[in-house]
Length: 127
Image (cartoon, rainbow, N blue to C red; front, side, top):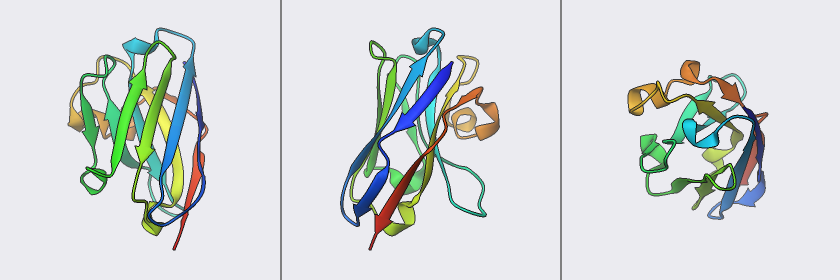
């Protein structure tokens, strides 16, 4: 599976961005997809994940109600809608894919479980 993230950019605080992650390769719906973010000097942090079918979604507590993950299996694409952005949301955002042997929050929030990673897209939120 190859992943290509896009949609990052510069936005003012309070604004919105929608990240996209397009996948190619093997059966897209067989994989759960996750979004992680990383800032300099810090470990990669879980943001959100969605099951292969799209029926289940998971979020880190700090983004619940603010971010929304979705997927379109017909388009092999996963999205992260980010609203009411704050400067602390500034980071490089990565999408990643993990096989169906992984399920539940305890697995999806662990970056070590993921098999494939996109290249990252930079989100900068100005104050």
